[in-house]
Image (cartoon, rainbow, N blue to C red; front, side, top):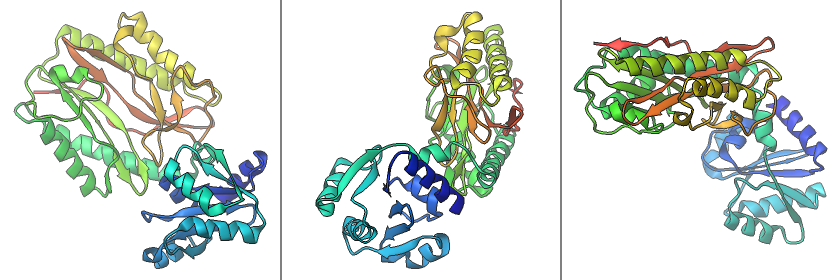
Length: 356
């Protein structure tokens, strides 16, 4: 945590920020280790303070020993004012993407003549690059989802519903130690597999269905996110064709990953391959996104992102083809950017799996 604070203070100095108010729960946990449901963090150039209520007295001491604990009595912004007064700070930056309008109004009223300055993405910028502890937690989360996939393959059969699959995956991941799913998982079969975000329904799985399973584990504060599409019975020629195209596009995008390459270039690697095989209109979402404490964080693998990838970033790679009359295929892995190139963290097989 001390290294994270040092990096944050360097960023604050670069931007001319004397004090920062952190309200986003994920950013709060990232900097402090505190997992409570309520709290505010103030970081100045010399102090770091965690403001929360009496419920968390003991928890703060255990989880955030490097932070001064201030127990608020109803209005945490009154405590922010006292902290700034004693520090001689006349302005404080706040997370404009996370503080609500009503919260900002109350903050401004509490601070009186002190200024509030909107700021964005300071902590998120730090979170782009994962340290060794974070990478290990993501590995562990990925291992949980890999294990659940291996077990569900032994249980899937025609006659089950999409909800049956969703419930079983949730149980398997929790049984392996996950706190929860990292998101509302997508289980989409048959014609519904052409829905990129087809949340599990009561549809009964049938022989001849493509079944897309997009799910992940939330484990010790970090997320995994994997997608596999399997076949119930024997695939048609068209189903086999689109599966092969998506698989090759996904492999090429992964192989393109290295320090310095932009998210735009990785996205184009997958997108151009799918387009060149006649299915460009059937791939409408980005190729991937960053992964960590949140399911979707930077960097993105999309045409909008021209920033180069850096070692320590973790991304998903998940191209797809979606045809309403045939079904859909998406294949997704979690990939770590290394000094030399990449490491695929997801270990589940990707060749077309047929379940008879």
